Image 1 (cartoon, one colour):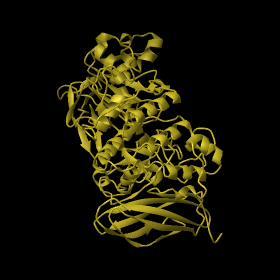
Image 2 (cartoon, helix red, strand yellow; image 1 turned 180 degrees about the vertical axis):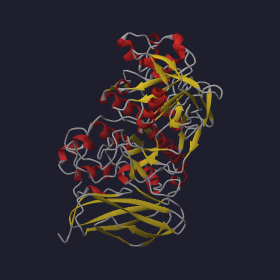
Image 3 (cartoon, rainbow, N blue to C red; image 1 turned 180 degrees about the horizontal axis):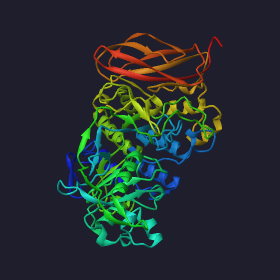
Image 4 (tube, rainbow, N blue to C red; image 1 turned 60 degrees about the vertical axis):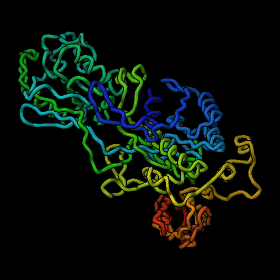
Length: 582
Protein backbone atom coordinates (compact mmCIF):
# COMPACT_ATOMS: atom_id res chain seq x y z
CA UNK A 1 0.00 0.00 0.00
CA UNK A 2 1.00 3.66 -0.34
CA UNK A 3 1.38 3.90 3.46
CA UNK A 4 4.05 1.20 3.36
CA UNK A 5 5.80 2.96 0.49
CA UNK A 6 5.86 6.40 2.10
CA UNK A 7 6.65 5.13 5.60
CA UNK A 8 9.64 3.11 4.40
CA UNK A 9 10.89 6.08 2.38
CA UNK A 10 10.84 8.27 5.48
CA UNK A 11 12.25 5.82 8.01
CA UNK A 12 12.93 2.42 6.45
CA UNK A 13 15.89 0.35 7.59
CA UNK A 14 19.34 0.81 6.08
CA UNK A 15 20.63 -1.13 3.05
CA UNK A 16 17.68 -3.46 2.47
CA UNK A 17 17.84 -5.52 -0.76
CA UNK A 18 15.11 -4.52 -3.21
CA UNK A 19 13.87 -7.80 -4.69
CA UNK A 20 10.88 -7.83 -7.02
CA UNK A 21 9.85 -10.76 -9.20
CA UNK A 22 12.98 -12.62 -8.05
CA UNK A 23 15.39 -9.93 -9.30
CA UNK A 24 17.62 -7.83 -7.06
CA UNK A 25 17.38 -4.20 -8.16
CA UNK A 26 19.88 -2.98 -5.55
CA UNK A 27 19.62 -1.71 -2.00
CA UNK A 28 17.40 0.89 -0.40
CA UNK A 29 17.45 2.90 2.82
CA UNK A 30 14.96 5.21 4.42
CA UNK A 31 15.90 8.85 4.97
CA UNK A 32 15.94 8.43 8.76
CA UNK A 33 16.55 4.71 9.49
CA UNK A 34 15.52 3.83 13.00
CA UNK A 35 13.06 6.67 13.44
CA UNK A 36 9.82 5.53 15.03
CA UNK A 37 6.77 5.47 12.77
CA UNK A 38 3.13 6.00 13.73
CA UNK A 39 0.62 5.38 10.94
CA UNK A 40 -2.95 6.73 11.03
CA UNK A 41 -5.60 5.48 8.62
CA UNK A 42 -7.75 8.34 7.36
CA UNK A 43 -8.49 7.34 3.76
CA UNK A 44 -9.32 4.24 1.77
CA UNK A 45 -8.42 3.29 -1.80
CA UNK A 46 -10.95 5.71 -3.26
CA UNK A 47 -10.34 8.67 -0.94
CA UNK A 48 -12.28 9.61 2.15
CA UNK A 49 -13.63 12.43 4.28
CA UNK A 50 -11.95 15.55 5.60
CA UNK A 51 -13.31 14.82 9.06
CA UNK A 52 -11.35 11.56 9.18
CA UNK A 53 -8.15 13.33 8.15
CA UNK A 54 -8.67 15.97 10.83
CA UNK A 55 -9.33 13.25 13.42
CA UNK A 56 -6.12 11.47 12.39
CA UNK A 57 -4.10 14.68 12.73
CA UNK A 58 -5.66 15.34 16.14
CA UNK A 59 -4.71 11.87 17.32
CA UNK A 60 -1.18 12.18 15.98
CA UNK A 61 -0.64 15.47 17.82
CA UNK A 62 -2.09 14.00 21.01
CA UNK A 63 0.26 11.02 20.66
CA UNK A 64 3.23 13.36 20.56
CA UNK A 65 4.57 12.89 17.04
CA UNK A 66 7.35 15.25 15.94
CA UNK A 67 6.82 15.05 12.17
CA UNK A 68 3.54 14.81 10.29
CA UNK A 69 3.94 13.55 6.72
CA UNK A 70 0.86 14.03 4.53
CA UNK A 71 0.95 12.40 1.12
CA UNK A 72 -2.63 13.57 0.69
CA UNK A 73 -4.45 16.79 -0.06
CA UNK A 74 -7.69 18.30 -1.33
CA UNK A 75 -8.86 17.70 -4.88
CA UNK A 76 -9.32 21.43 -5.53
CA UNK A 77 -8.88 24.85 -3.96
CA UNK A 78 -11.30 25.09 -1.01
CA UNK A 79 -14.17 27.54 -1.11
CA UNK A 80 -14.45 30.36 1.39
CA UNK A 81 -12.76 33.72 1.93
CA UNK A 82 -9.25 32.23 1.87
CA UNK A 83 -7.66 28.87 1.10
CA UNK A 84 -5.65 29.26 4.32
CA UNK A 85 -8.81 29.18 6.45
CA UNK A 86 -10.12 25.79 5.31
CA UNK A 87 -10.53 23.07 7.92
CA UNK A 88 -7.41 21.08 7.07
CA UNK A 89 -5.11 24.10 6.82
CA UNK A 90 -6.26 25.34 10.23
CA UNK A 91 -5.94 21.88 11.74
CA UNK A 92 -2.35 21.83 10.52
CA UNK A 93 -1.78 25.31 11.96
CA UNK A 94 -2.73 24.00 15.39
CA UNK A 95 -0.44 21.00 14.85
CA UNK A 96 2.36 23.46 14.08
CA UNK A 97 1.48 25.43 17.22
CA UNK A 98 1.98 22.19 19.16
CA UNK A 99 5.51 21.94 17.73
CA UNK A 100 4.78 19.40 14.99
CA UNK A 101 6.60 19.85 11.69
CA UNK A 102 4.02 19.41 8.91
CA UNK A 103 5.05 18.37 5.41
CA UNK A 104 2.53 17.87 2.60
CA UNK A 105 2.56 16.81 -1.04
CA UNK A 106 2.20 19.76 -3.41
CA UNK A 107 -0.16 17.74 -5.61
CA UNK A 108 0.05 16.03 -8.98
CA UNK A 109 -1.76 18.64 -11.08
CA UNK A 110 1.28 19.98 -12.94
CA UNK A 111 2.49 21.49 -15.11
CA UNK A 112 -0.43 23.96 -15.00
CA UNK A 113 0.28 27.22 -13.12
CA UNK A 114 -1.34 27.56 -9.68
CA UNK A 115 -2.13 23.84 -9.57
CA UNK A 116 -0.67 23.69 -6.04
CA UNK A 117 -2.94 22.01 -3.47
CA UNK A 118 -0.98 22.79 -0.32
CA UNK A 119 -1.43 26.45 0.49
CA UNK A 120 -0.36 27.78 3.86
CA UNK A 121 3.01 29.14 4.99
CA UNK A 122 3.05 26.94 8.10
CA UNK A 123 3.06 23.85 5.88
CA UNK A 124 6.16 22.66 4.02
CA UNK A 125 4.85 21.81 0.55
CA UNK A 126 6.91 19.41 -1.54
CA UNK A 127 7.47 19.32 -5.30
CA UNK A 128 8.66 16.15 -7.03
CA UNK A 129 11.77 15.72 -9.14
CA UNK A 130 12.94 13.14 -11.61
CA UNK A 131 16.10 11.50 -10.28
CA UNK A 132 19.29 10.47 -12.05
CA UNK A 133 18.53 6.72 -12.05
CA UNK A 134 16.89 5.51 -15.24
CA UNK A 135 15.80 2.17 -16.63
CA UNK A 136 15.93 1.57 -20.34
CA UNK A 137 14.89 -1.43 -22.38
CA UNK A 138 15.77 -2.10 -26.01
CA UNK A 139 14.48 -4.26 -28.83
CA UNK A 140 16.56 -5.32 -31.84
CA UNK A 141 14.57 -6.16 -34.96
CA UNK A 142 15.57 -8.73 -37.53
CA UNK A 143 16.47 -5.95 -39.98
CA UNK A 144 19.09 -4.64 -37.56
CA UNK A 145 17.16 -1.60 -36.35
CA UNK A 146 16.87 -1.10 -32.61
CA UNK A 147 14.48 0.95 -30.50
CA UNK A 148 14.48 2.04 -26.89
CA UNK A 149 11.53 1.77 -24.57
CA UNK A 150 10.69 0.91 -21.00
CA UNK A 151 10.04 -2.33 -19.21
CA UNK A 152 11.42 -3.72 -15.96
CA UNK A 153 11.59 -7.15 -17.53
CA UNK A 154 14.15 -9.87 -18.31
CA UNK A 155 15.58 -10.35 -21.81
CA UNK A 156 14.53 -13.01 -24.27
CA UNK A 157 16.58 -16.16 -23.84
CA UNK A 158 19.71 -16.59 -25.92
CA UNK A 159 21.07 -14.47 -28.75
CA UNK A 160 18.70 -15.66 -31.47
CA UNK A 161 15.70 -13.48 -32.40
CA UNK A 162 12.14 -14.72 -31.91
CA UNK A 163 9.29 -14.57 -34.38
CA UNK A 164 6.86 -11.68 -33.92
CA UNK A 165 3.08 -11.94 -34.16
CA UNK A 166 0.47 -9.22 -33.77
CA UNK A 167 -2.16 -10.12 -31.18
CA UNK A 168 -4.96 -9.75 -33.73
CA UNK A 169 -3.21 -12.22 -36.08
CA UNK A 170 -2.99 -15.03 -33.52
CA UNK A 171 -6.41 -14.70 -31.92
CA UNK A 172 -9.63 -16.55 -32.58
CA UNK A 173 -11.62 -15.26 -35.54
CA UNK A 174 -14.59 -13.95 -33.58
CA UNK A 175 -14.63 -10.26 -34.55
CA UNK A 176 -15.28 -8.90 -31.05
CA UNK A 177 -12.52 -11.05 -29.59
CA UNK A 178 -10.04 -9.93 -32.27
CA UNK A 179 -10.63 -6.29 -31.38
CA UNK A 180 -10.31 -7.07 -27.70
CA UNK A 181 -7.26 -9.24 -28.33
CA UNK A 182 -5.21 -6.27 -29.51
CA UNK A 183 -4.85 -5.14 -25.90
CA UNK A 184 -3.88 -8.69 -24.79
CA UNK A 185 -6.08 -8.74 -21.70
CA UNK A 186 -7.56 -12.25 -21.90
CA UNK A 187 -5.70 -15.54 -22.52
CA UNK A 188 -8.81 -17.22 -23.98
CA UNK A 189 -8.74 -14.92 -27.02
CA UNK A 190 -5.55 -16.48 -28.36
CA UNK A 191 -4.84 -19.57 -30.45
CA UNK A 192 -2.31 -21.34 -28.26
CA UNK A 193 -0.66 -23.24 -31.11
CA UNK A 194 0.02 -19.93 -32.89
CA UNK A 195 1.60 -18.03 -30.01
CA UNK A 196 4.13 -20.52 -28.64
CA UNK A 197 7.64 -19.01 -28.50
CA UNK A 198 6.57 -15.82 -30.27
CA UNK A 199 6.80 -12.20 -29.21
CA UNK A 200 3.28 -10.80 -29.24
CA UNK A 201 2.58 -7.20 -30.27
CA UNK A 202 -0.11 -5.69 -28.06
CA UNK A 203 -1.60 -2.23 -28.59
CA UNK A 204 -1.65 0.46 -25.90
CA UNK A 205 -5.10 1.88 -26.54
CA UNK A 206 -7.48 4.23 -24.78
CA UNK A 207 -8.61 1.26 -22.67
CA UNK A 208 -5.30 1.54 -20.79
CA UNK A 209 -5.74 5.27 -20.29
CA UNK A 210 -9.22 4.71 -18.83
CA UNK A 211 -8.02 1.72 -16.75
CA UNK A 212 -10.20 -0.76 -18.63
CA UNK A 213 -6.94 -2.51 -19.52
CA UNK A 214 -3.58 -2.81 -17.78
CA UNK A 215 0.03 -3.80 -18.40
CA UNK A 216 -0.32 -6.26 -15.51
CA UNK A 217 -3.10 -8.09 -17.40
CA UNK A 218 -0.90 -8.19 -20.52
CA UNK A 219 1.94 -9.82 -18.59
CA UNK A 220 -0.45 -12.32 -17.03
CA UNK A 221 -1.93 -13.19 -20.43
CA UNK A 222 1.47 -13.71 -22.06
CA UNK A 223 2.59 -15.99 -19.24
CA UNK A 224 -0.56 -18.09 -19.45
CA UNK A 225 -0.51 -18.57 -23.23
CA UNK A 226 3.16 -19.56 -23.29
CA UNK A 227 4.42 -16.78 -25.56
CA UNK A 228 8.09 -15.75 -25.47
CA UNK A 229 7.26 -12.21 -24.39
CA UNK A 230 5.41 -9.11 -25.51
CA UNK A 231 5.87 -5.72 -27.13
CA UNK A 232 3.54 -2.83 -26.31
CA UNK A 233 3.07 -0.53 -29.31
CA UNK A 234 1.44 2.88 -28.99
CA UNK A 235 -1.89 3.66 -30.59
CA UNK A 236 -1.12 6.74 -32.76
CA UNK A 237 -4.37 8.37 -31.64
CA UNK A 238 -3.09 8.57 -28.06
CA UNK A 239 0.34 9.98 -28.66
CA UNK A 240 1.15 9.99 -24.96
CA UNK A 241 4.52 8.88 -23.69
CA UNK A 242 3.23 8.52 -20.13
CA UNK A 243 2.33 4.84 -20.02
CA UNK A 244 0.28 3.69 -17.07
CA UNK A 245 1.91 0.68 -15.42
CA UNK A 246 5.21 1.09 -17.24
CA UNK A 247 7.19 0.82 -13.99
CA UNK A 248 5.77 -2.51 -12.84
CA UNK A 249 8.26 -5.36 -12.59
CA UNK A 250 7.65 -8.35 -14.85
CA UNK A 251 8.76 -11.97 -15.06
CA UNK A 252 8.37 -12.31 -18.83
CA UNK A 253 10.48 -10.54 -21.49
CA UNK A 254 8.75 -7.30 -22.42
CA UNK A 255 9.27 -3.83 -23.80
CA UNK A 256 6.94 -0.84 -23.97
CA UNK A 257 7.57 1.38 -26.98
CA UNK A 258 6.37 4.67 -25.55
CA UNK A 259 7.02 6.48 -28.82
CA UNK A 260 4.58 6.66 -31.72
CA UNK A 261 7.49 6.80 -34.18
CA UNK A 262 9.08 3.62 -32.82
CA UNK A 263 5.71 1.89 -32.81
CA UNK A 264 5.11 2.81 -36.45
CA UNK A 265 8.55 1.52 -37.43
CA UNK A 266 7.79 -1.77 -35.67
CA UNK A 267 4.47 -2.11 -37.50
CA UNK A 268 6.09 -1.30 -40.85
CA UNK A 269 8.70 -3.99 -40.29
CA UNK A 270 6.11 -6.50 -39.10
CA UNK A 271 3.66 -5.92 -41.96
CA UNK A 272 6.37 -6.12 -44.62
CA UNK A 273 7.51 -9.50 -43.25
CA UNK A 274 4.13 -11.12 -42.63
CA UNK A 275 2.60 -13.34 -45.30
CA UNK A 276 -1.16 -13.00 -45.64
CA UNK A 277 -3.84 -14.96 -47.49
CA UNK A 278 -6.18 -13.40 -50.02
CA UNK A 279 -8.64 -12.78 -47.19
CA UNK A 280 -5.99 -10.91 -45.19
CA UNK A 281 -5.31 -13.54 -42.55
CA UNK A 282 -1.70 -13.98 -41.45
CA UNK A 283 -0.33 -17.34 -42.59
CA UNK A 284 3.42 -16.80 -42.21
CA UNK A 285 5.48 -14.86 -39.66
CA UNK A 286 8.95 -13.86 -40.84
CA UNK A 287 9.49 -10.77 -38.68
CA UNK A 288 11.85 -11.40 -35.78
CA UNK A 289 13.23 -9.56 -32.78
CA UNK A 290 14.92 -10.00 -29.45
CA UNK A 291 14.42 -7.97 -26.28
CA UNK A 292 17.33 -6.90 -24.09
CA UNK A 293 17.36 -6.76 -20.29
CA UNK A 294 15.37 -3.76 -19.04
CA UNK A 295 16.19 -4.17 -15.34
CA UNK A 296 19.66 -2.64 -15.32
CA UNK A 297 19.83 0.94 -14.08
CA UNK A 298 21.93 3.67 -15.63
CA UNK A 299 22.52 7.20 -14.42
CA UNK A 300 22.39 10.65 -15.99
CA UNK A 301 23.83 13.98 -14.90
CA UNK A 302 20.78 15.97 -16.01
CA UNK A 303 18.98 15.53 -12.73
CA UNK A 304 17.10 16.53 -10.76
CA UNK A 305 14.45 17.79 -13.18
CA UNK A 306 11.04 19.03 -12.03
CA UNK A 307 8.51 16.31 -12.90
CA UNK A 308 5.74 17.29 -15.30
CA UNK A 309 3.01 16.13 -12.90
CA UNK A 310 4.36 18.09 -9.92
CA UNK A 311 1.91 20.87 -9.02
CA UNK A 312 3.10 24.40 -9.64
CA UNK A 313 2.80 27.80 -8.02
CA UNK A 314 2.10 30.58 -7.67
CA UNK A 315 0.13 29.93 -4.51
CA UNK A 316 -3.50 31.00 -4.48
CA UNK A 317 -5.38 32.70 -1.66
CA UNK A 318 -8.90 31.62 -2.68
CA UNK A 319 -11.00 29.61 -5.13
CA UNK A 320 -10.90 32.54 -7.56
CA UNK A 321 -7.19 31.69 -7.95
CA UNK A 322 -6.02 35.10 -6.79
CA UNK A 323 -2.31 34.72 -6.16
CA UNK A 324 -0.84 35.00 -2.67
CA UNK A 325 2.35 36.40 -1.13
CA UNK A 326 3.48 32.88 -0.25
CA UNK A 327 6.08 30.67 -1.95
CA UNK A 328 4.63 27.33 -3.00
CA UNK A 329 5.95 24.75 -3.33
CA UNK A 330 8.62 25.26 -0.65
CA UNK A 331 11.12 22.53 -1.46
CA UNK A 332 11.71 19.74 -3.97
CA UNK A 333 12.64 16.11 -3.35
CA UNK A 334 12.94 12.91 -5.41
CA UNK A 335 9.48 11.75 -6.45
CA UNK A 336 9.74 9.83 -9.72
CA UNK A 337 10.51 6.10 -9.92
CA UNK A 338 11.06 5.68 -6.18
CA UNK A 339 11.75 2.18 -4.89
CA UNK A 340 10.17 1.54 -1.49
CA UNK A 341 8.28 -1.10 0.46
CA UNK A 342 4.88 -2.37 -0.64
CA UNK A 343 2.30 -4.55 1.06
CA UNK A 344 2.03 -7.77 -0.99
CA UNK A 345 -1.63 -8.13 -0.01
CA UNK A 346 -2.58 -4.63 -1.14
CA UNK A 347 -5.53 -4.34 -3.48
CA UNK A 348 -4.65 -0.75 -4.37
CA UNK A 349 -2.70 -1.55 -7.54
CA UNK A 350 -3.18 -4.96 -9.18
CA UNK A 351 0.08 -4.58 -11.12
CA UNK A 352 2.09 -4.68 -7.87
CA UNK A 353 0.05 -7.27 -5.95
CA UNK A 354 2.24 -9.92 -4.38
CA UNK A 355 5.38 -7.76 -4.37
CA UNK A 356 7.30 -6.46 -1.37
CA UNK A 357 8.72 -3.47 -3.26
CA UNK A 358 7.32 -1.12 -5.87
CA UNK A 359 8.59 1.63 -8.15
CA UNK A 360 6.10 4.50 -7.77
CA UNK A 361 6.01 8.18 -8.73
CA UNK A 362 4.28 11.29 -7.39
CA UNK A 363 4.62 14.18 -4.99
CA UNK A 364 3.35 11.65 -2.44
CA UNK A 365 6.70 9.90 -2.88
CA UNK A 366 8.67 13.15 -2.56
CA UNK A 367 6.96 14.12 0.69
CA UNK A 368 8.39 11.38 2.97
CA UNK A 369 11.91 12.25 1.79
CA UNK A 370 11.40 15.65 3.41
CA UNK A 371 9.75 14.07 6.47
CA UNK A 372 12.81 11.89 6.97
CA UNK A 373 15.20 14.81 6.63
CA UNK A 374 13.06 16.77 9.11
CA UNK A 375 13.43 13.89 11.57
CA UNK A 376 17.22 14.05 11.22
CA UNK A 377 17.20 17.82 11.79
CA UNK A 378 14.86 17.43 14.78
CA UNK A 379 17.18 14.83 16.29
CA UNK A 380 20.16 17.18 15.90
CA UNK A 381 18.23 20.29 17.02
CA UNK A 382 15.36 19.13 19.26
CA UNK A 383 14.42 22.69 20.30
CA UNK A 384 13.96 24.00 16.78
CA UNK A 385 10.47 25.12 15.78
CA UNK A 386 8.73 23.75 12.67
CA UNK A 387 9.43 27.07 10.90
CA UNK A 388 13.13 26.80 11.77
CA UNK A 389 13.29 23.34 10.19
CA UNK A 390 11.56 24.58 7.04
CA UNK A 391 13.90 27.55 6.87
CA UNK A 392 16.99 25.34 7.24
CA UNK A 393 15.86 23.19 4.33
CA UNK A 394 14.95 26.11 2.09
CA UNK A 395 18.01 28.31 2.58
CA UNK A 396 20.43 25.42 1.96
CA UNK A 397 18.60 23.88 -1.01
CA UNK A 398 20.29 23.53 -4.40
CA UNK A 399 19.04 25.10 -7.63
CA UNK A 400 21.53 23.35 -9.92
CA UNK A 401 21.48 19.83 -11.35
CA UNK A 402 24.33 17.33 -11.19
CA UNK A 403 25.99 18.85 -14.25
CA UNK A 404 26.04 22.31 -12.66
CA UNK A 405 23.26 23.71 -14.85
CA UNK A 406 20.16 25.51 -13.53
CA UNK A 407 17.14 23.28 -13.02
CA UNK A 408 14.84 22.39 -15.87
CA UNK A 409 11.13 21.64 -15.51
CA UNK A 410 9.16 19.17 -17.59
CA UNK A 411 6.05 20.41 -19.30
CA UNK A 412 3.68 18.35 -21.44
CA UNK A 413 6.05 17.79 -24.36
CA UNK A 414 9.31 19.53 -23.50
CA UNK A 415 11.56 20.88 -20.77
CA UNK A 416 12.14 24.54 -20.00
CA UNK A 417 14.09 26.57 -17.44
CA UNK A 418 12.51 26.08 -14.02
CA UNK A 419 11.47 28.77 -11.54
CA UNK A 420 10.80 28.79 -7.79
CA UNK A 421 7.14 28.21 -8.61
CA UNK A 422 8.25 24.81 -9.94
CA UNK A 423 10.78 23.77 -7.29
CA UNK A 424 10.35 26.18 -4.37
CA UNK A 425 13.67 27.15 -2.81
CA UNK A 426 15.37 24.22 -4.54
CA UNK A 427 16.18 20.55 -4.15
CA UNK A 428 16.72 19.30 -0.61
CA UNK A 429 20.33 19.10 0.59
CA UNK A 430 20.15 17.07 3.83
CA UNK A 431 23.78 17.52 4.88
CA UNK A 432 23.64 21.30 4.54
CA UNK A 433 20.20 21.58 6.18
CA UNK A 434 21.63 20.24 9.45
CA UNK A 435 23.89 23.32 9.66
CA UNK A 436 22.18 26.23 7.87
CA UNK A 437 23.93 29.08 9.69
CA UNK A 438 20.85 31.30 9.84
CA UNK A 439 17.13 30.61 10.13
CA UNK A 440 13.95 32.62 9.57
CA UNK A 441 11.62 31.79 12.44
CA UNK A 442 7.85 32.23 12.86
CA UNK A 443 5.32 31.09 15.44
CA UNK A 444 1.55 30.84 15.87
CA UNK A 445 1.09 34.53 16.64
CA UNK A 446 2.87 35.55 13.44
CA UNK A 447 0.74 33.14 11.41
CA UNK A 448 -2.41 34.70 12.87
CA UNK A 449 -1.09 38.13 11.86
CA UNK A 450 -0.53 36.72 8.38
CA UNK A 451 -4.16 35.58 8.21
CA UNK A 452 -5.32 39.03 9.30
CA UNK A 453 -3.43 40.55 6.35
CA UNK A 454 -4.99 38.27 3.71
CA UNK A 455 -7.17 40.36 1.36
CA UNK A 456 -10.87 39.66 1.84
CA UNK A 457 -10.46 38.10 5.29
CA UNK A 458 -12.09 39.88 8.24
CA UNK A 459 -11.22 39.55 11.90
CA UNK A 460 -14.34 37.51 12.61
CA UNK A 461 -13.25 34.84 10.13
CA UNK A 462 -9.81 34.69 11.71
CA UNK A 463 -11.25 34.46 15.22
CA UNK A 464 -13.63 31.65 14.26
CA UNK A 465 -10.86 29.69 12.54
CA UNK A 466 -7.89 30.34 14.81
CA UNK A 467 -9.62 30.95 18.13
CA UNK A 468 -8.01 34.36 18.52
CA UNK A 469 -8.48 37.76 16.98
CA UNK A 470 -6.15 40.06 15.11
CA UNK A 471 -3.54 42.07 17.03
CA UNK A 472 -4.04 45.79 17.57
CA UNK A 473 -1.09 46.54 15.32
CA UNK A 474 -1.91 44.49 12.24
CA UNK A 475 0.59 43.66 9.55
CA UNK A 476 0.01 45.57 6.33
CA UNK A 477 1.01 42.77 3.99
CA UNK A 478 1.15 38.98 3.93
CA UNK A 479 4.72 39.38 2.67
CA UNK A 480 5.64 40.67 6.16
CA UNK A 481 5.57 37.10 7.52
CA UNK A 482 9.12 36.12 8.48
CA UNK A 483 9.75 33.34 5.95
CA UNK A 484 12.81 32.23 3.99
CA UNK A 485 11.42 33.79 0.81
CA UNK A 486 10.11 37.13 -0.41
CA UNK A 487 6.99 36.85 -2.57
CA UNK A 488 4.98 39.86 -3.70
CA UNK A 489 1.99 39.09 -5.87
CA UNK A 490 1.09 42.69 -6.67
CA UNK A 491 3.89 45.24 -6.38
CA UNK A 492 2.75 48.80 -6.96
CA UNK A 493 5.52 51.34 -6.61
CA UNK A 494 7.64 50.29 -3.64
CA UNK A 495 7.35 47.98 -0.65
CA UNK A 496 9.51 47.47 2.43
CA UNK A 497 9.88 43.96 3.84
CA UNK A 498 11.61 43.15 7.13
CA UNK A 499 13.24 39.79 7.75
CA UNK A 500 14.57 38.68 11.13
CA UNK A 501 17.47 36.23 10.85
CA UNK A 502 18.74 34.15 13.75
CA UNK A 503 22.22 32.68 14.05
CA UNK A 504 21.66 29.09 15.20
CA UNK A 505 25.37 28.57 15.84
CA UNK A 506 27.07 29.42 19.12
CA UNK A 507 29.78 31.25 17.17
CA UNK A 508 29.66 34.77 15.79
CA UNK A 509 29.57 35.13 12.01
CA UNK A 510 29.76 38.01 9.55
CA UNK A 511 27.40 37.85 6.56
CA UNK A 512 27.67 39.80 3.31
CA UNK A 513 24.47 40.26 1.32
CA UNK A 514 24.24 40.02 -2.46
CA UNK A 515 21.10 40.27 -4.59
CA UNK A 516 20.23 38.88 -7.99
CA UNK A 517 17.64 41.38 -9.14
CA UNK A 518 14.27 40.23 -10.53
CA UNK A 519 13.55 41.74 -13.92
CA UNK A 520 11.70 45.06 -13.61
CA UNK A 521 12.47 45.41 -9.90
CA UNK A 522 15.21 47.08 -7.90
CA UNK A 523 15.94 45.32 -4.61
CA UNK A 524 18.07 46.90 -1.89
CA UNK A 525 19.01 45.25 1.40
CA UNK A 526 20.39 46.97 4.47
CA UNK A 527 22.66 46.41 6.16
CA UNK A 528 24.71 44.81 3.38
CA UNK A 529 27.25 43.52 5.90
CA UNK A 530 25.98 42.25 9.23
CA UNK A 531 27.73 40.59 12.14
CA UNK A 532 25.42 38.26 14.06
CA UNK A 533 26.49 36.91 17.44
CA UNK A 534 25.97 33.27 18.24
CA UNK A 535 22.32 32.48 19.05
CA UNK A 536 21.40 36.11 18.38
CA UNK A 537 19.14 37.76 15.81
CA UNK A 538 19.35 40.75 13.49
CA UNK A 539 16.88 42.46 11.16
CA UNK A 540 17.32 43.00 7.43
CA UNK A 541 15.38 45.73 5.65
CA UNK A 542 14.52 44.75 2.09
CA UNK A 543 13.08 47.42 -0.19
CA UNK A 544 11.59 46.36 -3.52
CA UNK A 545 10.92 49.11 -6.04
CA UNK A 546 9.08 48.57 -9.31
CA UNK A 547 10.98 50.11 -12.21
CA UNK A 548 9.03 48.48 -15.03
CA UNK A 549 5.58 46.90 -15.18
CA UNK A 550 6.19 43.25 -16.07
CA UNK A 551 2.61 41.88 -15.93
CA UNK A 552 4.18 38.57 -14.98
CA UNK A 553 6.26 37.15 -12.16
CA UNK A 554 10.00 37.70 -12.30
CA UNK A 555 12.50 35.95 -10.08
CA UNK A 556 15.67 36.75 -8.20
CA UNK A 557 17.32 35.90 -4.90
CA UNK A 558 19.01 37.34 -1.86
CA UNK A 559 22.12 35.47 -0.75
CA UNK A 560 23.92 35.87 2.57
CA UNK A 561 27.54 34.70 2.45
CA UNK A 562 28.91 33.88 5.90
CA UNK A 563 32.51 34.24 7.05
CA UNK A 564 32.31 30.65 8.34
CA UNK A 565 31.29 29.35 4.91
CA UNK A 566 27.53 29.31 5.46
CA UNK A 567 25.51 30.32 2.40
CA UNK A 568 21.89 31.34 2.98
CA UNK A 569 19.72 31.64 -0.12
CA UNK A 570 16.35 33.42 -0.14
CA UNK A 571 14.25 33.25 -3.34
CA UNK A 572 12.44 36.39 -4.50
CA UNK A 573 9.39 36.45 -6.79
CA UNK A 574 7.61 39.66 -7.74
CA UNK A 575 4.66 40.54 -9.96
CA UNK A 576 4.89 44.20 -10.96
CA UNK A 577 1.52 45.72 -11.70
CA UNK A 578 2.54 49.37 -11.81
CA UNK A 579 6.01 50.89 -11.71
CA UNK A 580 6.92 54.25 -10.22
CA UNK A 581 7.39 55.56 -13.76
CA UNK A 582 4.00 54.35 -15.03
